[in-house]
Length: 399
Image (cartoon, rainbow, N blue to C red):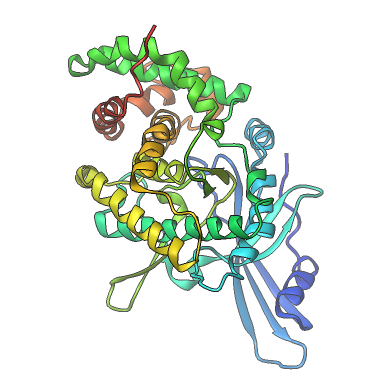
């Protein structure tokens, strides 16, 4: 199924004229595939360079863009449609982010949006942040402490800005009420298979044997809370990005190589709930092994920056630390879901057979699914996250 429109001069001319507010002439459009099939299951990405000049001036210019379209894979295109990912992302880019950019206190946190359309097939065209020297770091390695702290500081600003928007107009954000873990048939199939793989790994490692009974007993309770995350009662809500991990976080550096800024992409899972949703997703998916012991420091930095930005933006209601900590425990289900559902794909080094269909179809020892849960990188994650979520009480189920 072909999901990409023809990227011609005629296609981009009205888009760029609307952006620049003047007539232009386009001399060339260069299109490159930038989709990594092992990572970009949910979209088809194209890097586009447009050469142009303004009608009243002959000086040549180039602009770098990224086009995001439905994946060609029919299984994933249907999954993306069922989850409403493009509808959510288009609504966020066209409705929410422009309003955030009108606040008195604002920071750059996302690429500029050039074009969105739902018909005939959904498409989003964004500024290419790599042209501004932003780059993504290695997803399998994760982020060090410096990068992690900068990421959560900017996340805290984004969350606070959405809280300020909600204070000004309470009708906008509650529309984003679907979490990336809400139940669909396809998601349930993958989540259930992943849960069983984690239990199987625990059976094979004596050090994890105590978790087998805990996980089996808690499975219905845990899955119910994962699927209902957006409806769990929390003390304070913001618009979460919903997919806040290394691949969607880009960093920029100065001439001396020092870290200078961070920006985010991908808002196809925007969800109005506790900010601890994004925080848990990040902690579960994006930290270097060496800094997992720094989770408390990262959470503390996030909370301090979040409160500071709420006050700068004059948000009237500010959560207490006790309220925040209560929400952090509740949103632990998000982190656990990311750890068993997303993290295995993120940490897999094998690309052969790397598709959701193959993941579901084959669980043999030679399969992609077996590799996802039994490779060395994921096993190290497993040994860390099971005690962490156990300490939050996720596995405690009373009869």
